[in-house]
Amino acid sequence: MLEDYQLLRIPGPTPVPPSVQRAMLQPMIGHRDQETKDLLTRIQSPLKAIFGTELDVFIIAGSGTAALEAAVVNTVEAKEEVLVLVTGTFGDRFAKICEANHIAVHRYETKWGNALNTKKIRDYLAENPSITAVFATYCETSTGVLNPIQELAQEIKKVSDALLIVDGVSCVGAVETKMDEWGIDVLITGSQKALMLPPGLSFIAASPKAWQRIARIKQHRFYFDLRKYHDSLQQDSTPFTPAISLLYGLEQSLHLIEKEGLPSIYSRHQLMKDMTRAAFRSLRIPLLTNDADASPTVTAIKPTSFQPDMLRHILKKEFGLVVAGGQNKLKGKIFRIGHMGYCHPADILQIISCIELGLRKMGQNIALGSGTKAAQQVYLKYFQGDEDDI
Image (tube, rainbow, N blue to C red):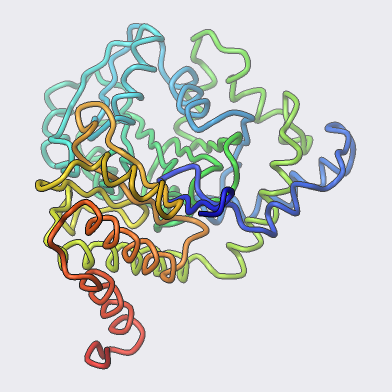
């Protein structure tokens, strides 16, 4: 096998387009010079479109978790009560960040693999009026669930004035997101997912309602003080040294997103989700989530007849195909396929074909080509309305 060959299909970091890689090779510039100010100015408008907002989007040099912590320490005081909605590992991470900052956490946990029940959350808030913020995960990467954030925002408003703070790290840029229209108060994403960049940047925007809280919060913060980012952005700058090479890459990735168009991007991700799920149904391998709850950016598979990690080992060794395993309580029980960002339906066909071969090498009695054919049928039906030509 080729030594340097790799098919990276985990739910992040995701592959980086060649033009984005080239953009990051541009010569370094002064981070306080006009060139950097111009770069930051050019980036704002397309970022706002992806967030679905007219508000400023602040860029933090740090992973998505950096922006999660920024969201916590800028909106909630120590000992205040918050509700953290846990549908997997990253909802749990939000809770741990809150607890580390001495915030009183109400955990509302669903069965991992299921999306949130927004009406039950509304009832919980009605019974606990002292809760000042609700923390939710849009796409729970660890389970492949897409939570109904628009519906959640509507239900919260019926009974509570709590802020809605949303981790959109593994789906913003790949699924419809309307921060302003839906009433999200703080929205977060990261560079290494649908935005098609290496890790190292996180993004955060806050509503006017959230800014009222941010202005009076006395929680200790320095690097993550959003007031600093706000003041600097008014001068087309950042409060601390920006990751300039990543900003060059970001500009190019935003150009690619604008060129394809957000509706087309959302449709492409939905198609890849449907192709992947159809393939595993055809192979009679169980999926962790149902169709209604499934994310367009990552699919979680929960086999019953073989060890997921054994398949992952074979796929990497034989084909250079890297898929993700399970996390926390799902470790060793599932594997996950990332299909977001720089990913095409042709990649799905390659992934499924490799998995079929891997399954046969494990001794699984599957019909070669059955999963690939099912994915092909979804593709043809999507574009032609005719799946009988295969």
